[in-house]
Image 1 (cartoon, one colour):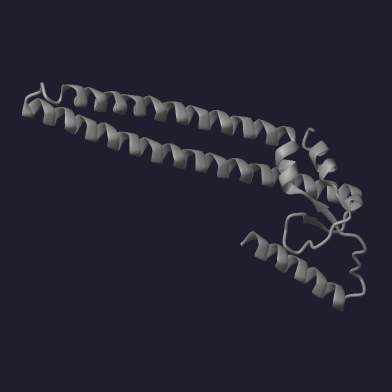
Image 2: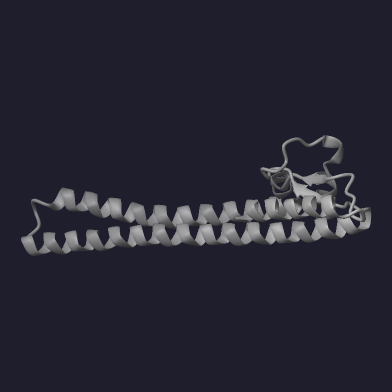
Length: 170
């Protein structure tokens, strides 16, 4: 969807250029958004926060998995010694803990995906605002994302990625 809009905007610029003498873009600048996300201080901080959240999720999941494994081993060791009622009770307990483990894993996965999505969206919005401000200050008439499918070639001398990273606090 994003690529569609980028292509549409670029097409509109080209059409307007074809029909207007007043519209003259002589230079197109580009930004490598992935590099901005990877190297800007905010991007690095967000990546570390996300890694911490993932690690905490894994700890929760592994703790419950350990409980499930211990209960399973306990049932296997005591199976011949337990009454049918006690065995069924432990089996039910194991089933409930296993379901809890599956639900926890799903919930944690959704939480991480949501956090990742919100983090990237926030970083992209902040980067776009920075690109807009810097473009007005330095008179960049058109800035495209390097990774977009409409950029077939990009001369490094028009790469403003480092300027964007610097303006984001790097």
